[in-house]
Length: 358
Ligand code: GLY
Image: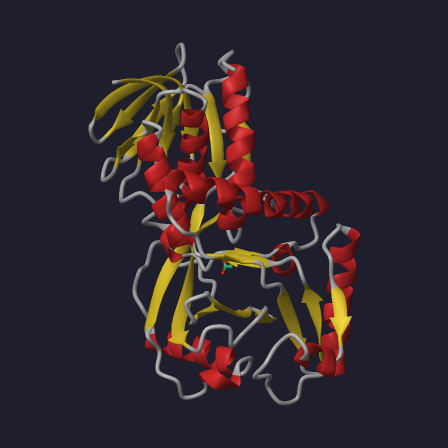
């Protein structure tokens, strides 16, 4: 089999890159050891939320903001081309504080976020009430991030599947890439289905990227890749109950248009341990109910764990490895869904330019 580009990993990142390349006429082979979007992309909550995720790295914050701005057009184009509806809600987010100390801490974070260009405003309790119902007792105030949003990543993956099929991307599920050799002209790729040649390859296998052997050159600054396990629990409330995403420290609660309420999360470095702890889920439910009283004593309708694509580098590994035919797009950690449009644009444009295509 010969392709212009082989992509190792068919999560939201690899699939979005595949779509962009195929739109521009390239022959793309998209490989995944499991199913398309069946790993972290299936498990993600779909937070498009620089306000909650920006941290203290200005460049990373800019990256998050730029991808957030790309989301409405990306979503519209994907939905139109696929004919699939995508649940995207520009709902904003509220960081809750229950004491003056907590409010002061959130204020410092808000000031830093604002200096990076993230829109944020401080709200008192009556102001919070004007945009959110069913508030917990004891609120001292909140910081409102009006531009934070959410999307259902499963809708996005369903749509990406369709557009990839329509654009002629060859999708190989249950077919792992084992090795990418950049030693000659282009790349030689060993897969479970045999050897494949291409002009370029993309390593976008998320938390599983470290399992793929790279020959012919070392990875640029050798950013590592490992899973960070997280839990999500789901409840049903009347649609529109929640309004903005609610956050406090490591807990967030968001509501899909259907009414489903997702609460996250946890972080564990325990390898690919897929066991499910009732205690962890129950603790998460308790934390969520402290932010949304209507969740108290409400029966859980679903729950799962997922593996975030972690890396110890401060930002995802993204771009070309030296002047080789290997491109990387992994390590998106808590922001793979948010960063997909921008990463797909950057990597696909770079590959097309490097191959001398238009
Ligand atoms: N982006 C939210 C999380 O990773 O839990």
